Image (cartoon, rainbow, N blue to C red; front, side):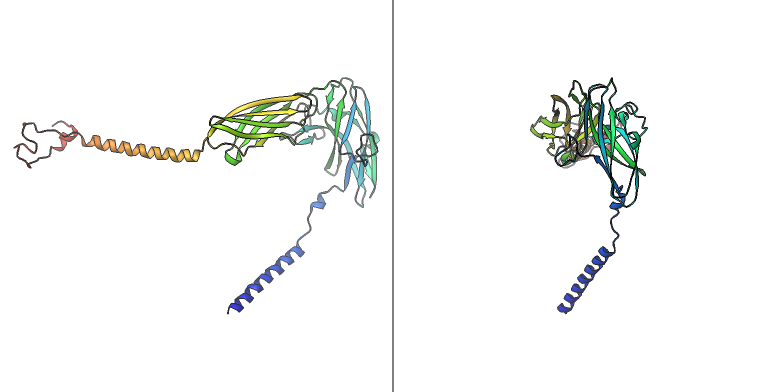
Length: 345
């Protein structure tokens, strides 16, 4: 019998393995490849700003007001059919959480009509037909308006086809004095325990993009509280932009009143800080303690009520010995009920 049970278990295990293998064999292929546009867009190689090997992750252009800057975009068709790609310039900005994005065409957002995205011109190459398995290089120009203020003007080249868009960043700087400046605002502590975070807002008050570094310090009433050491944030803060960020704080205390100070620095001399206070109270334990105190108070009140309910004992009015009207020992007569309550006879 034990041998028979073992064979049955082995057979069941083999059946499960065969079913899993069949499921893997018949599962449909991932559809991730279908989401690829079938072409790529990147800065063309062969310029002085190129990295070793000719590859560039983005465009970098700099010039004085009224200058005309030139560069080239490379489009590569990786499919067996012709592609028609349209090109345009766009303003770049920070989303609320600090990510980089490009404004859509005709967005109507502030700065869109006269922003750096409107300085781009692709001439006859605004619409490009790319034969199968072919690489096309498209020249473009950036005309800096005469009255443009100095500093960084983030932008992007957008290539689009059939509703799909690919953006290539353009670091565009107008020559002149630069200022690195920022502020820290709206510092607050949210959550408790391991889920505690320090929330804050960064605002770029200067005219150049910043790579901020964060340092969080905390002082508690009950002693030293660990904060968060200096670290570079994974955010590029563009000029004039505001982002709302949170920093995990696993060292938050369980019970204390803490003052948290957030300090942010960036290359170029930018520095700012702000602080906020927060109470840390283990509310669950405090709740049980409060319930216990409430129950204790209720018990004490009930006991006091019973004592008052019984009232004082009175001695006999005839001056006899305690025990009854006749004064005989043992002949005790309880007082009427209405005398215990103090009611009128």
